Figure 1 (spheres, one colour):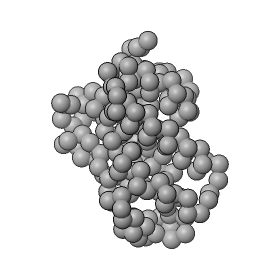
Figure 2 (tube, helix red, strand yellow; figure 1 turned 180 degrees about the vertical axis):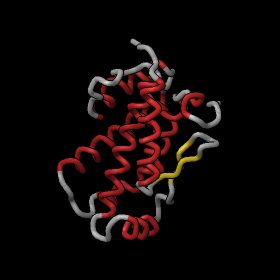
Figure 3 (cartoon, one colour; figure 1 turned 90 degrees about the vertical axis):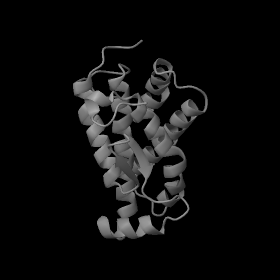
Figure 4 (tube, helix red, strand yellow; figure 1 turned 120 degrees about the vertical axis):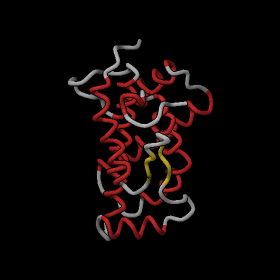
Length: 178
């Protein structure tokens, strides 16, 4: 069941999510189009690898980038759910990503009429993100994140853009959603 929308609560999460995602170096944000795009093509991780070595750390920079990315993506889904009256209202503790993937994302899809392939892309993208986030929280494992790099373009950016389209752009900047 939909609850009251809380744009003052979702806006900081949305802004933090965008900032973390962009800082990760994996995606870009276009304010005018109100969309995300991959920063690097999925078939060439070399440019991203050069970037994170300089930006963060030559040994664990990829890990740092993926931690920023996964936390930003988590903030984004929470913001979209709050913006649409789905999920808990702060200041209650915001639930872990698992609850958003299993409960609140399907609710969001239902209330915003997200069906078929778009729904699968959104939920599958966040299931993969949950696995990445859980792996990164547990410990550091060298060279594991490179396997997820192609998913930025194929799964995550489409999922993020589905969420962005559910947001009320009047409250979050950008042009109104089409």
